[in-house]
Length: 615
Image (cartoon, rainbow, N blue to C red; front, top):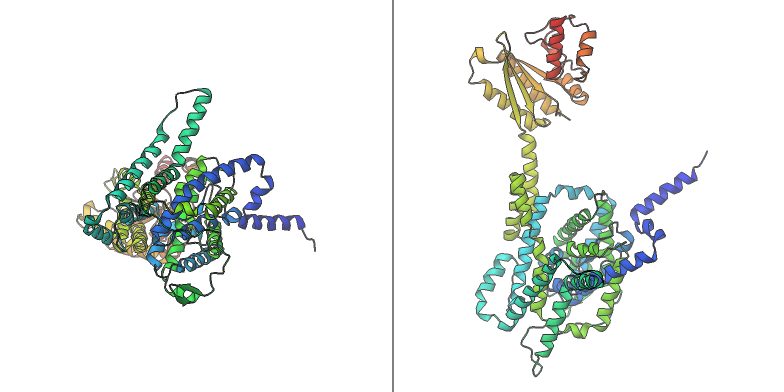
């Protein structure tokens, strides 16, 4: 026996590189790559730290959960991730779902949710369930993210205006906000609005064009880059300085973030016993409090991350299953360090792309800067106003509002507005998880409806002898619901006609029939029988071989492969054209009857008819 060790080694190497993409870029890593990755990682960290605290607040958790997820949530993506631009960390939609399923009285159940989400994602990846993401269309995703953005912005109104209340859904948030308008704190309101205006102004600097040349141009470009990419950090630093300066006799006119414990968290297995608010509970008891979030959160995280990966794929095919494995490993390792669930972020990934990231190794610099913040900057974080964090989050989620998609759908395909609107409205009324489910179901129903009701054109012609023929052209393949629709359409066209106006033959063009099932074939057989009563013959032309096999077995017809249109005249001249009788349209009929008719395209029938006349 001959063993091809080289081929075997290549196969093993290919499998390892598929599951460990770090093996594809690490051997060729250069010093210049390290510089670009360092700049990208540090830039992302400056944006991520304020967002991490804000997203933890959105999830109803202590800021530490957000900071831990920012530090450790993306480390495993260095090894398992395949798209260099993606940054894994706390994400807005996942934080919103965490808020829905984690009881504030038991905040450490967020760690259990993170661990279980990772397990679900890894299992989905190893089972190659990446194709499941394809069942969620862009209109459904657009409606879902738009509604989620509105819900997240609504949840920040209380901190933005300095009021306090508890609410679960967007309707309840607005009702309680309106009822608490009289309790609005003017200092927090002024701080929050100023931060929003400042953030919008700094973001708008991206559109400025520098007229200067030489060194001055470079300095201006660097300044604009720092102001736009570091806008979140600048706003948080300045607002914290204002809050610190305004403290009088240990009293602040602003609502502050408060004390945050410093230090790196201890490595801890998430399936050990927990203790919250003097109550101990086991891993499985905590898991029972998270249902169905243990399924919904990982699925939404997968959808979000794969969507980001596709956006930065550069036209390459994304292995969605590998991205599931990478995201799952990030959540599993993050849960060991006390993290809340994480996912890919579109805004931070775009920032990563803008700064010229070379590999996924940039996440190590983001993590290092985050750990330095935990070690040395937590006393400073005490003075961050909650209003400024709310402003950061509101400005971050505005990019999720897909009004541009609504405009595009209106101009191109208004029918796709139905799943968009369904998911949007359902998310606002019933919550993001049920809204996403409703949107997917409605979208699938729309797809089924389009396949069951294809566009069918009927061309009616009369030849020189006065015989009428119809040419039926379905726009897509006919599965069993669509055949009944075609039958109904043909019979409705025939019913009001008198005998002289009815066609003697109806030709069905099977060009778009890529497949057909048994029920559809039986439906065509029923149509043949109905047309026989009307003294009308049904012809099937231009059927593919796979379709013809089923039709021949069901209808007892002989459907042959036909020559191309370009070769038809030549083959007509060399074929024995007078071997059998023709009908009134020049279609050759076998002596055994109309059930043994040779099938061909309409153009080929016309060409053959001319050849027969010449013969």
